[in-house]
Image (cartoon, rainbow, N blue to C red; front, side, top):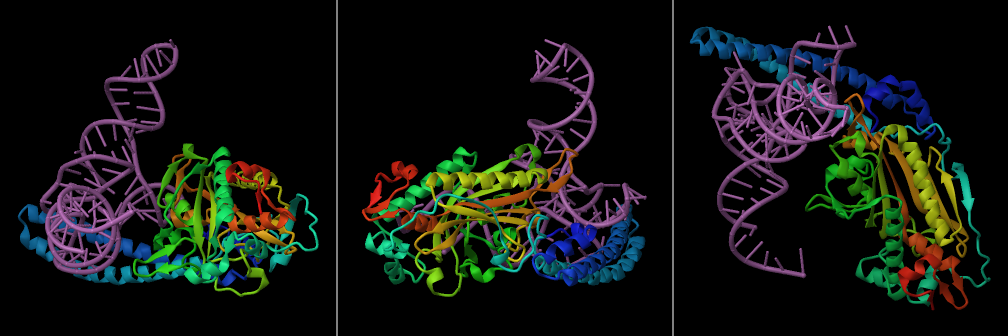
Length: 423
RNA sequence: GGAGAAAUGGCAGAGUGGUCGAAUGCGGCAGUCUUGAAAACUGUUGAGGGUCACACCUCCGGGGGUUCGAAUCCCUCUUUCUCCGCCA
């Protein structure tokens, strides 16, 4: 969430920036400022009462020690009123703080100045495009047909075991997916990211830390018996490594990469757009996460974009990069680039990576700080991106690499797969 | 799952009702010394709120209670350790 102090000091700028998301934040922002003022004045009142109580208690202690029990008891009588007042004020303060918190949770991150205003994906800005769209024969198949033809992904079997959206990968399909995971992790490691394996279930505090809670509660699978959530992305456990941490400036830059399955309830529509691998309840993803000094975070974001570009170039997949408009931007993000691969057989773009800078929005919830050169603690910036999401990369490869002889394996993956064609 | 013990500052570890936000050691930072470094010595060093700055307030795993006063006593939850059971 945004810091109340920042809101106080940059009220107009924040309201203005939030109009890019097509929301009128003025009522929320003004409400928060008002509550904050109330909070501070209540706190001051309470503090004064507590200070007086502390003083009296000390005096009572001294009196008892020097044997003046009677005087002490007289002073005791004076404290009862203070106690009542402080109890009432304490409750009031608690209520106000919670109201303020609830309000702050509802204010999304302020978009970066480069983010275009807009309501929907129509308004996203295409900033880069690369790769050749292969010309396929007229009988080119979408990946779900190919999956069946070569018996590499079984959607029906997944339905039997779990339900829709839980595919079973078989034979060369499973091997290709594993090859991609290893290949991505290797590429990320080469680029300076430390590989890490994290839990796939997280507690409530972690959900709040990265912003999945309380806003997107229904999108996560919730294990109610133990109050744990299945992760929707590795971003959650990896970023939460730094919850409640004060790191030293020398620790920057922090770069992690991790492979995890991702679980999303996505109670969405059915139809061609969610067929096959396009949208799943369980899928695999290799994630990159960075924690950066505020002055370096956009440089880091660009670095992540370049890195993902390199992977797609290696795979020789046609792709484009979009800068998301305010309306399409995630709640917690200040700026996001989406990578989309062109699916030739489906004749549409598929999102395969999303790279975001959250600035201090997550760090504020996480209490992720660092000591600056003056020894003061400051919130760090967090970033993350997919490098990459497996199913749609798989779909892109199946569709774009199909030939009458079978599905060719991209050259860089052949050593990882141990075969060069699926037939 | 059963029995017992414990949770204190970056780490280790004192503190069992009052001048304790907390001894001491290590680590960190600054300085003296040194050509430089190490060692030694000196000083400094938790977080948050609040203030122009001070004052002041809160925090000793979380929540609640007793008391004029709680790190210290009580209740509860969580976590860790030891032993037993179960188990990939």
